[in-house]
Structures are given as structure tokens and as C-alpha cells.
Amino acid sequence: QAPLVESGGGLVQAGGSLRLSCAASGRTPSRFVVAWFRQAPGKEREFVSAVTRSGAAYYKDSVKGRFSISRDNAKNTAYLQMASLNSEDTAVYYCAASTRVITSAVSRADMYDYWGQGTQVTVSS
Image (cartoon, rainbow, N blue to C red; front, side, top):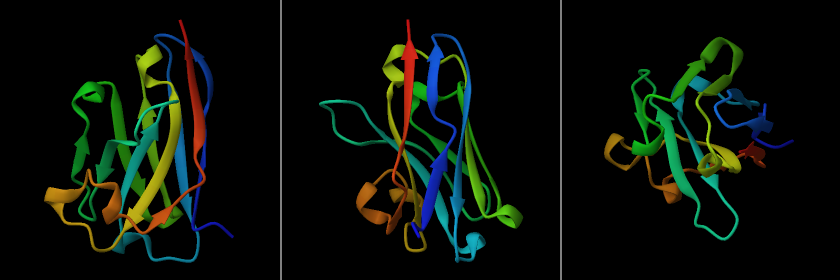
């Protein structure tokens, strides 16, 4: 069983919204920093957002004000609410988790030990 399972991706028109979910299995969620990364075709994987154990949120500049990350430790689930989507948001979105990442390094993919399989988000113009 994958440690993290994403869901909620799909096809949406520009300006629309989606909510991605990341469900964790068999782990104590409160110990983890949870992040979302994305990878568009032909591009490097990039940081999108992260939420720390205390609930502090971090965002890539281009998604600030449009995306909102949250977590529900009781449900072992993290969320990424995305609004005002545009074509540049089209990518495979990955959920990641780590117990060792520090605040100054939340955007570094190499600091995350657990990854989901990804969920496709496609924004049509």
C-alpha cells in the first residue's frame, strides 16, 4: 500500500477550482510536514505548498492567494484547495511528507521521504 495517496485531480476550465486530497496510511500524521509538488511535461518538479506540524503554511509565489493548504490530523489527510486555475497550473501534483524537513527547507524535494503516485490536474483555456 502506497504511503500517500492523492485524489481530486481532473480537468477544469481556466478560472475554476479543484481540491486535492492526500491520505496517509499507517503513520502518525502530526509528526509530518506535508507538501505538494507538481511536475508539468518537460519541466522539473517544483514546490507548490507545504504545511508544518504547527499548521504554518508556505506557498510558491505564483500560487499565493489562489491555493490554500490545510491538514486534518484526525483524518490522516492533507488538502490543497486550488482556485483561479490557469493553464500554467497544469501538471501532475504529488503529495510528500517528511519528519526531518526544517522550515527553511520545505521547498526542497530531497527533504521528503514519502511520496504519493501523483494526480493529474489539467486546466483548459
